[in-house]
Length: 130
Ligand SMILES: [Zn+2]
Image (tube, rainbow, N blue to C red; front, side, top):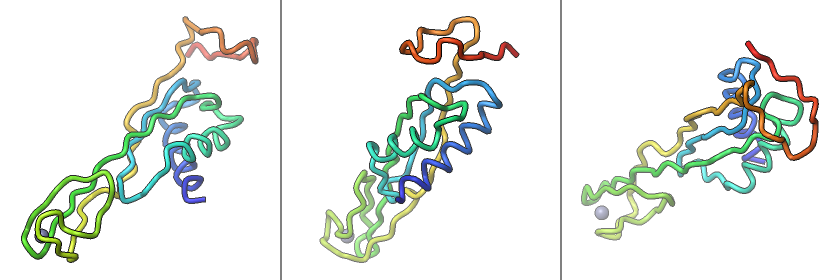
């Protein structure tokens, strides 16, 4: 369920940037603290995008590492998986910095002049030339 909320937020951002043009591919960065499952997010995005300019678009997910800082010894490290134990001193007083952001990195638009054979479905897709 978590991923569906994220998928809808991503879709909003994609639609905003696409401005009515069809989207081929979108790339999003999600902080490790969000604990997004790529497979679930892609599925959720596919469902949410049905009937929108992003229908059928590929979603790429990049997990952004979180910086963990140990309050005990000051050791800090970038991790893909949020941990709760310091890798250096074994302390459990850890601060996490960043890692909770959700950023739409790029959107690839389908170009009107060069429409690829879209898997045979919806051959008469209207493509805006503006
Ligand atoms: Zn430590």
